[in-house]
Amino acid sequence: MSSVMNMFGCGVVRAPPQALGIGKRSGGGLTIVCSSRPQKKATAHHRKTRPWKTQPWDINRKPTVYDPLPPLPPDWTLVIPADASAAPLPPTPAP
Image 1 (cartoon, rainbow, N blue to C red):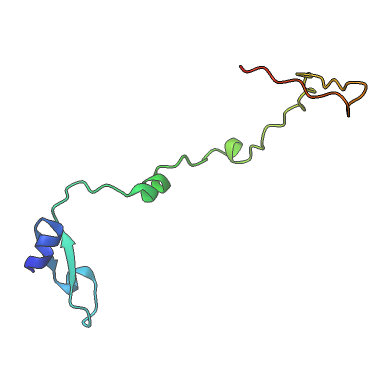
Image 2: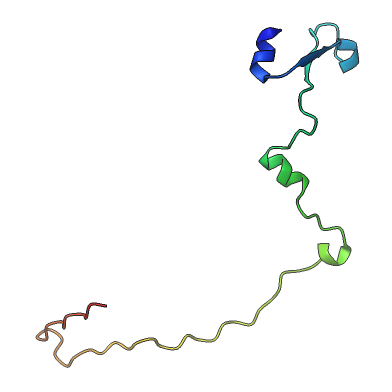
């Protein structure tokens, strides 16, 4: 029993099997009594506190339909010289 106390760092109470509703084949269970307000781990907490839809108008609500976006204005235009094979590319200015 001392190894269990060292592992959890607190007192441990061993409940009788009849109190836990366990059959005769089990050796009983361990109940940790050191935590007065145990906290849920991350996933269990998020599942318990997620916002549930309870109102019919909210449950039956469809996604919002938006108008299509207008065409984007041209940011720049590509200017091709008359003789593309002979003209070298101009150097780009450094920002």
